[in-house]
Image (cartoon, rainbow, N blue to C red; front, side, top):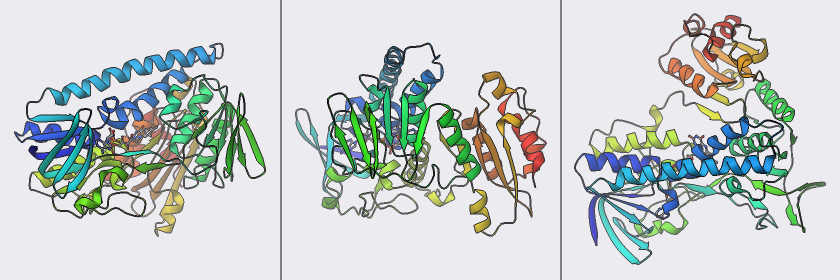
Length: 450
Ligand SMILES: Cc1cc2nc3c(=O)[nH]c(=O)nc-3n(C[C@H](O)[C@H](O)[C@H](O)COP(=O)(O)OP(=O)(O)OC[C@H]3O[C@@H](n4cnc5c(N)ncnc54)[C@H](O)[C@@H]3O)c2cc1C
């Protein structure tokens, strides 16, 4: 029987950060992780980092590079990087004498008692405070044929073998878009099956069409309003059937959302509530229905990003240390990036959302190729894209921006900070920015506000 001040279930961003901080503050901590391949969590091992490593490799491929060979080399380099990060993450906590690391699968047996099934038996752990950060896994919709070995999810596709010369991607959310763009760059013929009227239905329409045009230019065929009924496997290929449409491919990636990892946690034994989809119900300070048990990261149903999980850690930290001041509702101007090529980033309101919220708006929108005072995309040879700002006409504060351009994953953070600080668009328009940089776009695009 192990008794600690804090028990963390799952090695994700929030969980590992809290474990490390609480131990450094001199408290006893136990951290349970069910898979050594997941030391460091989803982000490090199967999501953000490995996929962006593959995107970067794919972007460096020349037309003359043979796809299978190029992909195999890229995967080997991805595996090497991830192996190092996994080990570094393990060492970070393993070296702390206040932390007990347990390799095993946790499930609740009572409010503050967890049983961990390990390779050698079971271990009971009790703790005053418990943090559940068990994350999400790819959702497998109930489609006949989905269990075919040619059907991959976002984790398994990263080691697709053989490299699919023809890839059908089911789902055009951010994960589907990233893999569609990446596999096209690796040299695959990609068909993107999108169930909505258009891709990115809630994005700025000008931006959504520019993204569609860019993906199409790169060799991605987009089929809108398509719902997959079945997947049929034959000797050497697979056919995706969607109404009257039949798409033949060498492999299928199913990217239709993620499911919380709560089914095996026996949360009912502790009286911890979940919603109808299985996400753990939490309040504004990430408290579950049971006192001193928190849920952090993807599993609490919030936005599924690593930096949200990191911010969840800050909220729980405040609870542990007694100030309890930080809340989810404090979050302002939370940006996001979809790592297609070039990256697509967004923060704040779109024009339609701003008008619906009652703002008088000014808009500035310019295709990247027409921004004369921003040579960086031309230097990089990546002039696809468009930038659209939405500004409040009464006080000229920035309400939102969508940046589909080189370096947008950095630029969006600058705009988000300006929004949090309540700066006007004029401050960004008249800013002194380095040259040549992508930030220079702000000088020119915002001069067009109308
Ligand atoms: C393909 C892909 C790309 C992504 N790209 C980005 C990106 O570019 N930027 C970004 O911000 N976000 C990205 N995300 C989202 C991001 O990866 C997640 O939001 C983040 O990793 C969630 O972290 P977490 O704290 O919820 O826990 P996770 O990192 O998911 O960790 C949960 C851990 O709990 C363990 N576990 C589960 N059940 C148990 C149990 N019963 N006992 C013990 N251990 C258990 C799991 O093995 C896992 O290690 C991406 C996601 C995917 C799938």
